Image (cartoon, rainbow, N blue to C red; front, side, top):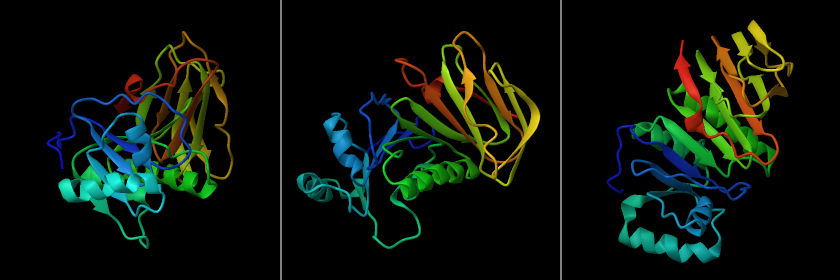
Length: 239
């Protein structure tokens, strides 16, 4: 393993093998970068060499096998090969490694689109990360998704687009939405009715969401030609 920080100062960046729209990956000096199976090809194409390559490698193309085999020989501590039959998905296992090494903020690319079951699994991975004390983000094109619980998130006043909030638990309470087209105050959401879908946020407003109890999935989708709202632009405050 490289000598990158393992005390949670930086972030963890996971590149997965799902559908991926090319976007800039901002890597800090203290960040941990993990290639999850076929995500290795995306990182190498972007000129980024991962700190760790992890997976059962069922989605890694033949052209990248020589790179993997060479890494096994020259830096075996940077390769973690997983069995094909296991309870964890490759992405969950990668997230587990991140949390064990002290990285609490986990950015996940290449994890939306494609097979619906994989997308749902990755959304549930966000819940698993939040339940275990971290903050995970799915990033794709113009979309950002994260799970919150017992906290308030304030959006940057430059954000313009849709805002959706879904209950992941049976009941999510103390939901307050401010600075949006459709506000809420101390409301409740349930996981059997999509009340929180497709709200709107306009640039120049200070929009925020508060969730007191329960896990809730927040999805931001940028409107027009604007850039994706990045995790570092969100202000998260515990209640």
